[in-house]
Image 1 (cartoon, rainbow over the protein chains, first blue to last red):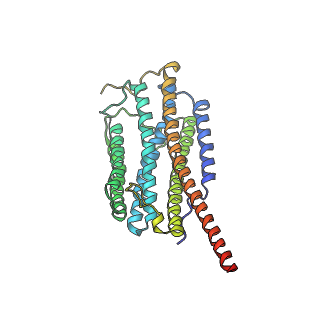
Image 2 (image 1 turned 135 degrees about the horizontal axis):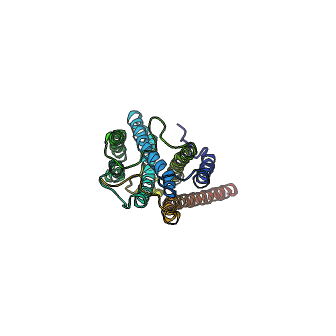
Image 3 (image 1 turned 45 degrees about the horizontal axis):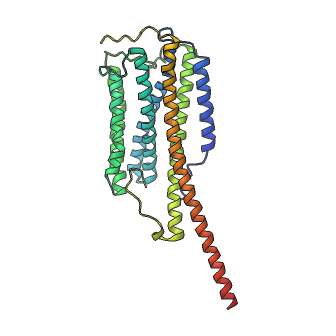
Length: 244
Length: 72
């Protein structure tokens, strides 16, 4: 089977991402009106909410890709799942920090432990933060991939469950940007929000593709070295959390 | 829980640094990731260049050996 070419379309995707994020920033600061209640501080929402949504969707995607790996046994799906979770963790840290900055400005506290949305998001992040140490703790690559996939599937199921439970909770102070009726944002704010969401989703896709391209290139270099110079020329792989 | 969601809006000079901090954190996060990836890709490129050099040296050696056997 021919090796997958993850680099195909990467340049176009990167340019599109830069374009959409630039447009989103322009809309955030020059088009979207100031919020009547929160004023300028509400501009953080155009970054914080898309980061949180995309990172949670990325965790679920990681679980779905892991399930495909368990079904097919094809290691490429394990790598895709790993990259999705890896990127989601990075974006979720961004979501957490930007949310804390907003909370400090709006509520006067960096963190509110009584707020179910915040705590449940933190629990999801901490749950997925154990994914890499779990992989690292297993030396055999086959077992590592299998156990990590089972973990990713289980943890991914936890994400929508967590989301639903938080929605059902009555006592919250965390604002709701979206609901089934489309939320209560006025038109220009809604447009800006959706463009920002698209920008962050594209950023996730670009970085994930970039990561997969880099990993594939590394593997191909190793294979090339082995076929050209023999097994002795290839240094044994060090223990790693990343798929090999 | 006494934290009101509809807190009074911060004036621009107070809210500005918070908004700037949030966007700077985001840019810094992406920048750190990109720098790490650039380091990895550069290392891989160096490996590929080394492999190409070794391949070229091997081809030259084979060519040289062939010339010697032809002369002999």
